Structures are given as structure tokens and as C-alpha cells.
Length: 232
Image (tube, rainbow, N blue to C red; front, top):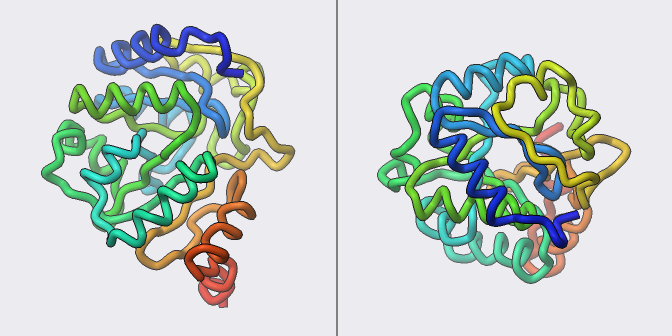
């Protein structure tokens, strides 16, 4: 879906709109995303999604921002690299972060509260070229881009723009439609989210089975056993 698209121009338009206090909807590899930064934009996203403010949103992240701002051991960073670099899979992580990093410090107090939980932050990595370009711009401009899937909360990720519920679509100041996203699935699964400290699965998402296989085969980390123990 991304081949032949004006990725850099669209990323620039999206980023500028978010910098101006707006809300944007556009495709990442695991579904359509809705993002913002300023308090009014974040409130608008949450209202449109009918999402409780107690549920944190995610942060757009590239590998350099991950290495600079996320505080995990080198072996843990190797796990993330294996997933996103060696296997080219999308991955969302939850981990402690450096509050002094300029990108994180850029978040207004309200957005910061809604993008963090108990000293951790959710970071989305390697979710397609448009995501990656926006994440790069966020890092280079020291201006965080935070958001969620572009859907009413609990109704599953949307893989074509036309499936986004009207209240959510209407919340955006700018939209980009590239058609069907690569990791579409019948269950409406977005990115898989894993806590990098406890190795607990926060959300089973797209390519979760592949991520489990990589962690077990290369790092002897059994996500499914951890999840079963958590449930017990």
C-alpha cells in the first residue's frame, strides 16, 4: 500500500498539522491511526474513540528514539532489534523511559499523563514507512506524536479508511487514505504490545505468533508461558 505514495510530503503535512494543535488520521502497517499532541487534540481523540482517560495512548517511535529514551538492558534492546530489524515486523513495547529526553519533555502535562502509566510508556516501532517518517520528524524536531488506533474503543482496528466510524473520522483535521493496510486481519488486531521488563503480553496483536517464535528461539523468552502464568 505504501509503494508509490508521497510518504515524505504526507508525513510533513501530518506533522505540521499536529504541531499546529490538530488531529490526524492516516495508515500505519497495522491499521489506521489517530494522533495529536496538544491537550485539546488529545481530548478530542479520546472523546471520539469513547476511550477512558485511564487507558494510555502510544508514542510514535523510531529505533534511535528507542535507544535514547527507553531504559532497558542491552539484551532487551537486542530483542526489539531482532523483531523490527532482522524480521521487519511491527512491535509496540511498554518500558520505563527517560523523562528528561527532549521528545518526552515536549508533551504538555495533560498529554504526558495520557501517554504514560506508572513510569512506563508505550512506544510503537516499525509500523510502515509513513509511521517511520513521522517518528523521525518527531525525534528530530523534539516534538512527540502520540495516539491510538482510529476506531471506537473496543471495536477493533480499521484496515481501510472507509471502515473508520464517523465520529472518529470527523475528529481529524487531516486524513490520508492509502487503502488496505498490510497487516489486516479478520479479528481487528492492531500491534502486539509487550512489557519489556516483565515480558507480560499487554495485547495480543498482529504477528504475535511470529514475535513469540523469535523470542523463544533466539532469546529463550516464552511469552505464552508468561501470559499463562499471569492469567493463573
